[in-house]
Image (cartoon, rainbow, N blue to C red; front, side):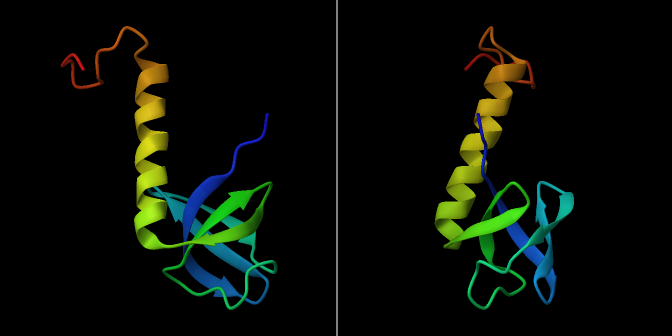
Length: 85
């Protein structure tokens, strides 16, 4: 199974960019994105930015990933704060 992660471009250096989500930063190849710029949200798959997202869509996808992570960490339905969902 493959997973594509929405991340925000922090800085660019030609075909490479530093990207970030939830405080985690990594490098990605942005050569497939036209005019990548800091602040852009992109989908990262296998180290490549493969699609640009608008901010609202990116934030919604990041929220869904966070909720999925919470569900996987707490399969009994209790959130990490200890309150039932």
